[in-house]
Length: 146
Image (cartoon, rainbow, N blue to C red; front, side, top):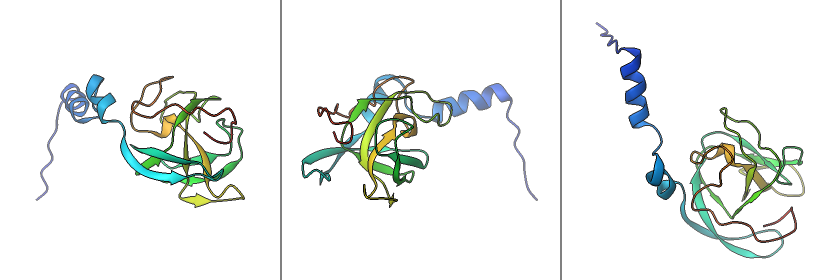
């Protein structure tokens, strides 16, 4: 016999809030951690940060939604090189942002071999129009590379 447990809606929302993503300082310290060292297509080597992504997302040639798709990144703990401001992100899960993170996709579609930019809205932590805590800023001036 199957037993069903009914919880009042208010209690369920409170419980989910307690089990959800960390908040405040906890979320910022838990967002990303040290990752592997990688060499990007222009030959430069970088340390990376590993950040959890919650949804599959396009990897773009440029940090903008109108950038060509170079591949796709699957939801997992994925490494990123750095972040920079760019065009408005893909609106994923209701989040809004203009921060993009440089990485290599799990699949590739063209001569860029999956390298490019993912929207901050695909990362599990971070707020609307805020940088992803723990990820360094890109310092290069070429929008194709960090």
